[in-house]
Structure formats: structure tokens, C-alpha cells
Amino acid sequence: MNVCEVAALASLACILVCVGGADLNIEKGNDEVWMSQVLLLQGEKNRLKRVHPLTGYFVRVTWSDDVTEIKDLGPLLLNHRAFSKVRSDSDLFDTVQVGDQGRRLVWDDGASLNISAIEKLPRTSMDASEFKSIMADLHLNSDALGRLLGLSRRAITGYRGGVPIPNAVVLAMRYVAQRWDA
Image (cartoon, rainbow, N blue to C red; front, side, top):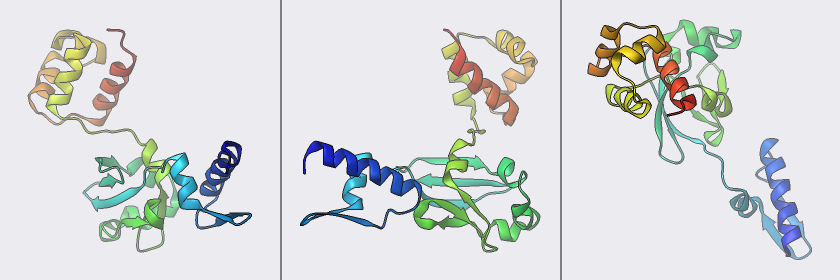
């Protein structure tokens, strides 16, 4: 196979993955190229490896690259009627598992979430060390950060000391950290 044929197969592989045809094979003369080989050229997308339900619509997910995150599924579950049973029954919520070869979270009632939606959810947890690290990177003291976020110096000092940080503050900190010109 020449480079053009490989590139064409790689593009086709990308299309087939998007439409769920990754189990197909492609034949070229006497040479048979399996999709798994073509997918290696494209690079495999991250998939879910494990999920563990927590309280309040939170789950701990482990991705195929072994990164573990806590995700708040609340914004997705609360926004769609299809999840009304999952929302109202904590025992049902606890049945969450990885499905479709790591491409979905599924529940016993048939409800499911695609990983693309899960990946887009912002990280809403932050510990004191990460909070302090962002403050240091931004060269801001408690008074300055409090002023920037509309919070008291006492609240900032509390977060630095280990008081649980509300989601809105976490999102604001990450937003400021991404856009700050230090």
C-alpha cells in the first residue's frame, strides 16, 4: 500500500468510527486491512474503563488512559426527561455501568449517556492545594482574589484551608486561570 491508500483508509476509518462501523474490514486486492490496524493510524479515542456511582448525581470515572475524574452528571440528567427515573431513584442511579465498549454510561432502565457529553462536563471539584496553586500562578493574594470573584477574604482563606469549594467558585477559578495574563 502506498501513502495515499493508507491516508484514504485512515479517513474512512474515522468516518466508520463516527457512524459505529468499526467492526468492518476493508479489502484491497489480496491485501486485507483490518479496521483495528487503520484505527491505530488515527489514534484511538479515549473511552471509559470504569465507573463508580457517588452521591448527588456524581460518578467517579476512569478513562482508558487511566485518568480518574469525578464528574457531576446532574446538568445532563436534570436537562432531559429520559433520565427522570434515574434522577428519582438513587438505587437505579447506582446501577450505572460502562457500556458499548466504553462509549456510554448505561443504567438498568435502558437510559444511557454518550461519552462525548460526559467529556464536555467541566471539572467541578477542586481541593485546597489546587486552589492555592492557581492563586500562586495568578500572583493573587486572598484580598485580590476575593475582589476578583466577589467573595470575602474570609471565604478565600477558608478555601485555602480546606473548606469545600462550591462548584461556582471552582468554575470561576478555572475560567480566570485559563484567561489570566500573568
